[in-house]
Image (cartoon, rainbow, N blue to C red; front, side, top):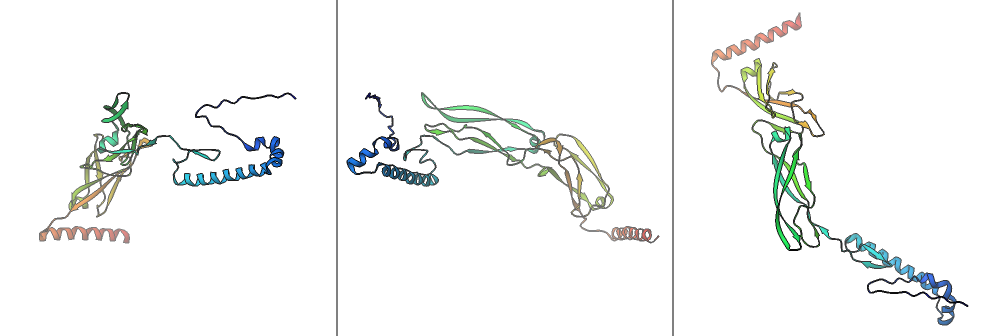
Length: 273
């Protein structure tokens, strides 16, 4: 009978895997007769132990996902994947003019980097393109611009848009709000509102209605640009702070009563006829 042999070279650090099930057909009978051991039962027992080990490892991995990354025949192999530092966040104040028209901001940062000579401080200029219509809370992320250190992935640098207070306008979503102070006479007879927009245009807005407390005049298309479509804009909402006189003369009171009474009479006659 011809015999063949295969040489197996094992080098340091290389794992040796022997699958018991592979040698069972040739030797199960001999081992059973010689030692009184059922090798097939051994194979089943080994499989059961492996399944139990795998279940334990899965349970550990739920509690600590970094603890076990790979399993090789029931043997845990611990991960060497570096962790990533938490993001570094920084507010980026912008005025409404910048958020209305869009602008470019350049931010100078200093951070540590690691090279063959060790750690050193470098300075970088980051360019941020502010888009028209961006809102407070918008985030701009620069990947891995944090400090470098061995075995750790640098943190992301995140700038968060913040809105500076404006002396004329306030913002509500895509709408702009302005409050106009007017005397009570103009509230009754009408007025013109003069405004300079955030992009420098001068608007004259006639108000012909009687202005009551809490009245709000809407000018469509004069609000903030929509972030997804800057060609479209929200509304301009004009509110009014009506200034009433601290006192009136008898003649003024009489005149107001006469005016209001006359209007009431005319309105009544209109509906009667």
